[in-house]
Length: 193
Image (cartoon, rainbow, N blue to C red; front, top):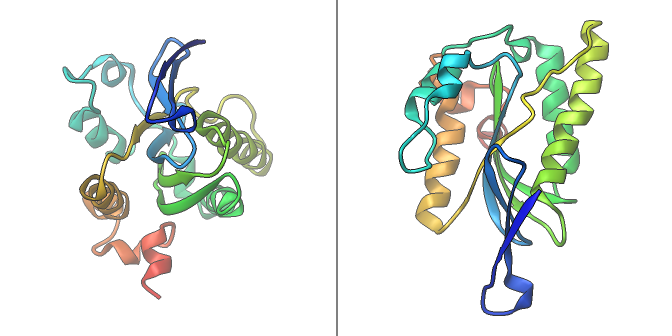
């Protein structure tokens, strides 16, 4: 794993960038992250090959995810609730959840990392625990999640608001419901009460 440390004002504010050869990631205590992870069969190979010129996620990839490729096992209540349970169980421990949504073939999370928690370890735990439970429930095995995840650290309040709005609005954009708070597998649903 390649690591590059970018110093901040003092040693405790260092941001550590790393890559396993796929996507670059950054980890730092107190950093707010917008994270997307998806099921292993969520994107056709042609969509994975498309790259955005400036390193941003391609809107086309988001549209392909929202089109519902793959088996979409998270469309079923049991597996989707398992992912929700795993996310909520970790809230306040390794991270603080600010917004999240479970879509039929992917998950978006906006979270603030606590203490020395590593984003890669947190995402690995979310995916590992949920995969074991979902595979057991469905009587299957094998890879449930794509090995990588996409993350963007939040730069300011405007970026945070955009990430939360995108997360909550994703079911509406995908045509799954009319209002964000109508989607039951989202923090927008919980905050509406």
